[in-house]
Image 1: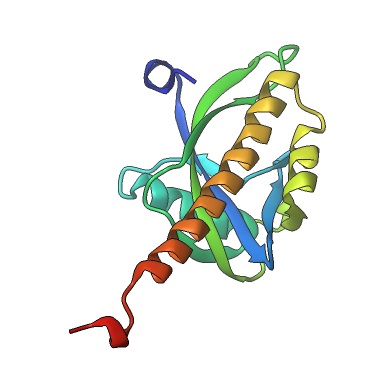
Image 2: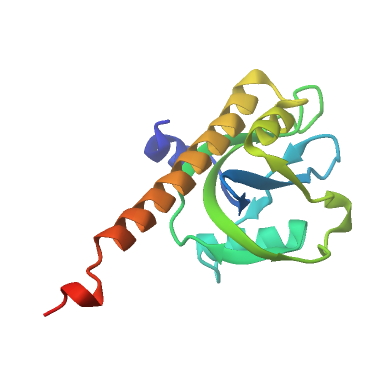
Length: 172
């Protein structure tokens, strides 16, 4: 996506792509939208006194009751829409910065109507498509795919780093 050009012309939001590892699989924590008709990642507006990753972390807690370790840099940008063309306000598009948050703890979310639920990557891709236009469904599926790639790449880097460290027997 031409993120630089698009991000300057559309309003910005942040999302926490909440995940946990279960053996070799990855699960994603999704929440219901305000209208309760679709699944989404916890997301919202940025605030002047918070970094973008802190704002995403706040959304994860408020909407899903999730806390954990959030990456300081976003891993993906995607397009999101709010509204419908037949309503007076119409449709508004946003650029969303997606941050990975490895969930360490969950509790009851302050926003009780969100129904936070864990899904496998395959299920998350499917649930994020329901009730959305093809364009926006594809954007969200790509977020899941990129998140899986990023999480697995980090796992490989950690494993390779551990394997390349000298043991005490090899130190002078």
